[in-house]
Image (cartoon, rainbow, N blue to C red):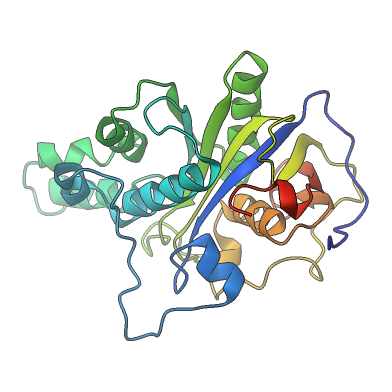
Length: 281
């Protein structure tokens, strides 16, 4: 059964299928855990595992990097996509901000030389690089930052790749918990990572069909249809992709804003596919 999300946005000329979903947020380490409501007890480890990284890169990766690896691995596994050849588009608003802030404090406040090892994993595309190296991925990979429009930007990038011949593309959006020294007056958020595998619209393993377009003025977030995320998640700049992941998992239909009203107004039109055609059904 599908659930209406509101009036659809204008249909873009190119639609794609979603064939895999991955999700990490505090208390819920996988998409399956989230949809089943199986939150981890507070006394159990809440951190992402990063098992998709090799051992060396797992030690180097930040918590956000490990979360990215976990959700991409989950989405690729559900879609049956090859991690060696599937392009990966990584979106993040602030990237590895905590590591960079720590390096700047080390240099300017503590008057100590910066660590080259830490610097290599403080750049915005650190997680993308570590994931590509660990998976020995020969496909295209890139990192994108567009604040609250990052979910729309990664989806449009992936749609372009599929339109030009790629069979499958993984997209992932993540931001670490907001550093207190970076946001003094804006609402703080907790770490979130969400991933989708997109493919051609005729993929028999499709969970849903999506198109991306600028939303009309009346397509704004509807509190009645938005997921009730754990406290702090709704302010994460990447929550739009998590909203889409949740809608795919729950087989909802209609228009869904990708920015919760905080970006330029991009939205997706979502059409669920019968459960009998879904991967893993």
